Amino acid sequence: MKKQPNRWLVFSSLAVQIALVIYAAVKLGSWLDLYLKSESNFWALTLSAIGIVFVLILIQKQSKNLNDS
Image (tube, rainbow, N blue to C red; front, side, top):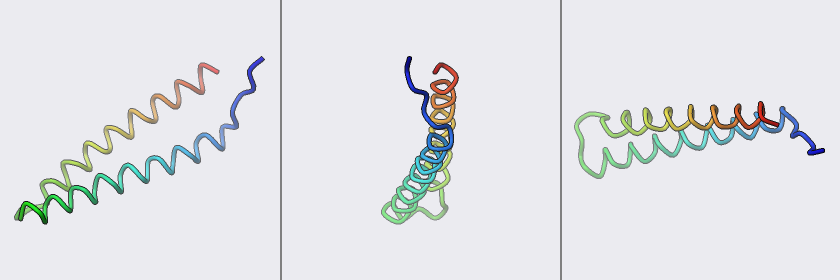
């Protein structure tokens, strides 16, 4: 019998992953806006939206893994 992971531990690590993904996406977007001398925050907004989609995929996979075990 496989020992099931502690749900609190799984979801707290998921929160850290979410924070890191969003932070990295926004920082990279801000850097690109400065590097490319963009008048608007196009890259910061675009990469943060992509980061949110990636976070949703992470949440879905993690939830599926918990339901399967």
